[in-house]
Length: 111
Image 1 (cartoon, rainbow, N blue to C red):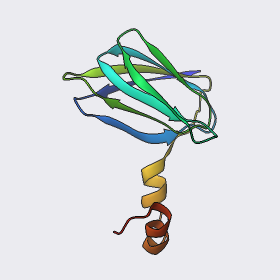
Image 2 (spheres, helix red, strand yellow; image 1 turned 120 degrees about the vertical axis):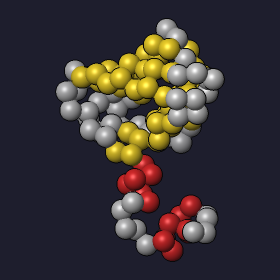
Image 3 (cartoon, rainbow, N blue to C red; image 1 turned 30 degrees about the horizontal axis):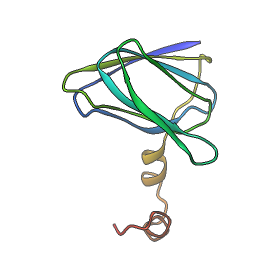
């Protein structure tokens, strides 16, 4: 088991990411966080969670968080592994050296 504390300024974001070796539980200590995950059928489960509320992110599923309040927000995260791993989607995809042409076609955008 392991823990993490995350502090978010107003508008602060925890980019889409996943943990390959652990399920995460996020408990809001302060503030309002838009929080969610995408399941294996590409369905998004998201809502605003506030102080005292919890959201669970299943192992290996992409999830995200954003402070939607006007003040600081803090989350206490717990994992069912001492080494949950972390794969940040933007860094992995856009910082990996994949050819821009392929990314443009995959995401229907132009760089």
